[in-house]
Image (cartoon, rainbow, N blue to C red; front, top):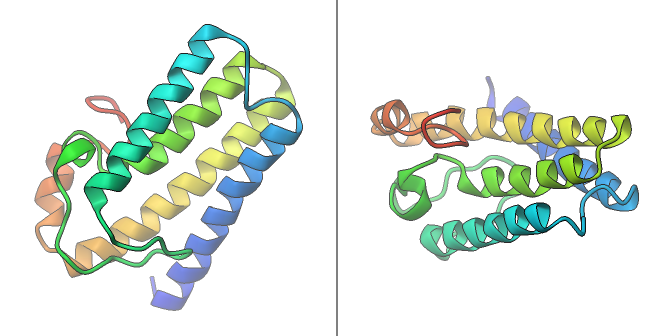
Length: 148
């Protein structure tokens, strides 16, 4: 996939994630009074913070763009390749299940589709920049340890 196409697909993925989360929020489908939903979402926020701290001072990019500094395989990256996307999806789907409706499920899938698009784009580029990524990917699941 050419860089321009990857950039577009990646940006659409990010916009899809943002749209899904904002639509859930506006439909009162993201937050819940359920202690289970709150616990999952708090743990997901902590995972996101841990991943961000582990990733270091590297910047956030609206499009997929591997950063300099080597492949990060410590912290939560030891267990999943995309802990920040995993955390966003845990927050999203906990909200969906806590406020179950057809519309909220659709918004959850919009968020999931965006995350999967971003993952595809990032992995395509990271494999080129860091040849050791293939070995890392064989040992580490994309989003949920030991499952997916």
